[in-house]
Length: 86
Picture 1 (cartoon, helix red, strand yellow):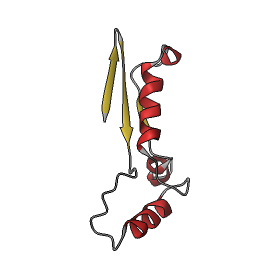
Picture 2: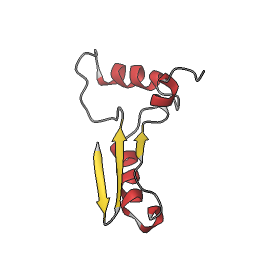
Picture 3: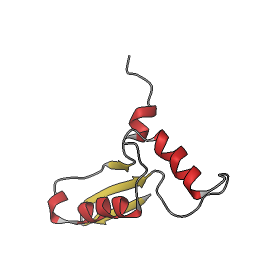
């Protein structure tokens, strides 16, 4: 999670699983990628560049009217896991 503060503005960028070379409990990096890709609504996990692009956008003048948000950079993973609205 990264908080970006510019004058009166503050936005937070959060990241989900990204490809970073850490495989841990998987047989191989390929097995990890396949398992994590299967969880994502987009069919693939993000990269560090995806997360960096969100931070660059929030730091740019193009986001000057965006304030106080939490921006998940997760390919829709959090939304897909949310319980249905009642």
